[in-house]
Structure formats: structure tokens, C-alpha cells
Image 1 (cartoon, rainbow, N blue to C red):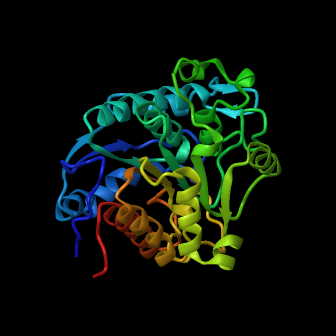
Image 2: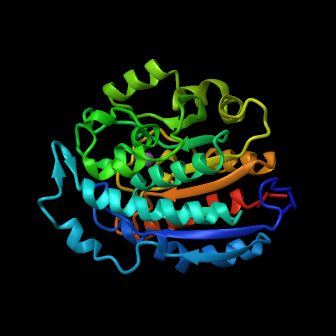
Length: 322
Ligand SMILES: [Mn+2]
């Protein structure tokens, strides 16, 4: 059932679905199939059913990403494929910015989480006072210097915040030209359980609101969500964007993802976050990333994971249980 919760920033209830079939920020093939599979399993019908109209954008169409992925010269120090990641992210940034200009609700479907830099930057350049909730097992705030794996899907928050700019590959110079970057006070994490040493240091130094699984256990998911919303949106009036890595949810429910970590959110806790944000009336954008239909030991793992992504999207658009 859908309650006509008023979406303060989207009175016309229009969604822009941004397909981001991107895999360059990490090592595993298959995550580029996420958008296709989610659409095949009913994403667009779900959007209509929740009372929204939609358009679909495909900013990466026409680029030979396979060739870019296999370009072995695309490295910078430890960072893998900076050229590919930057170029893709810039395209998604432009599409996302356009969606915001038209006052539509952007739902960006990954692909790996590197694309989070694009959606966050488009968001804060449209809403400099906006808040961001990053649901994830990981903080994804490594910098090009601190990353151990060199996989840039572990770095999008650092790029969106402009951290460690002096060590950035030059491909990312477009970010330095933007008027607004994400400020530490604008972002809160929920679901953390695998944070690198260097990342822990950054969180502490910048005073970023971070709610780990320990906090979820201790206070309960409701209290954690309320605190996260308060941290990034003290007035309660500003828009909130959610970047949702499905690996925030426990692999028991979401197995078909590239970097699963046990001890995560239950499916209900994961959906509650989005239900609560939707009910607040200030939800203003969603990324669903790291669905990898090629992973998981069985077909059922893939189906469960895709369906979890679809449930997240429906809850964000207003689906409630009663
Ligand atoms: Mn992530």
C-alpha cells in the first residue's frame, strides 16, 4: 500500500532513473549487469505503482567501457582505472545534475559504488544545504593515497569531499572546478562493519557521523536513523540523498554483491531506513549500487539480491506495509 506522503521537493512525483552499468571501480565482472537485471525484475513498473512517472537515462551508453576496462595503462600509483572511473562519473554527474535541474527524483542504479561521487556532487551542487545518508558495510572514504586495494569504489566519498586533492590523478580535476563539495557535517553512515585504519582516522579527524552495526545493536535501528537524520539535517527541512550500497544488508539476504561482510543489517532494518526517510518528506534521491547478478552461489542469491534492491527503491518512493 502506498500512502501519499508528501515529497516536499517533488510535488510532481517524477523520477529520473539513471542507469549506471559500471564496473571500473572494482575487480569483479558482473556488477555492470545490475541495472539491466533490476529493470528486468520490475523496477519501472514498481515506480509507476507507487504513483510516480519516470524517464530513463543512460549516460554511459555508446562508450566502449570494456576496452577502457582492459586498458592496462590506466593506473596512477596504486589507483586502478582512474581515467575510466573519472570519465564515467563525470557523465553520470551531468545526467544527475540535469535530473535535479528538472526537479525530478533521481534513482541511480549501479554498477559499483564509485558512481557515488557523481550523485553526491550533483546533489550538493543543487542543494548546498542538503544531507547525505550512506548505507554501507564500508565507509568508501579512502583517498588515492590511503587505498590499499587501489579499487576506486572504496574512494567515492573522499572524492566528493575533496580530500587529499594534491594526490589525485589529474583525471579528477573536473571535481576541483565545482562550486560545492560535500562537507563532513553533511554525511552520516549507517551499517558500517569493515572500516580501514586510514578511514577510521579520517572519520575521527573530520568528526563525521558514523553509525556502525555496534550502534544498531546498541540503540536499535530507529534511534540510529533518527540520529543520522538529525546529524545531516538538523532543521529537518533540508533534502536528504541516500546512497545505498546493498552490502549494508547482511549477506544472508544480499549475497550477490562484490564485497559482502557478515554481521550486517537485517532486510527489515535495511528497509526501515528508507521507509523512515520517505516518511520524513525530505527524501530527495537514491543510489542503489553493488548488485552483482553474476555473484552468489545459487540463482536464488541473485534473485534475493535484485529483489532487495527493488524493495529499497519502492520504500524510497513511498511503499509502506499498511
Ligand atoms: Mn559502498
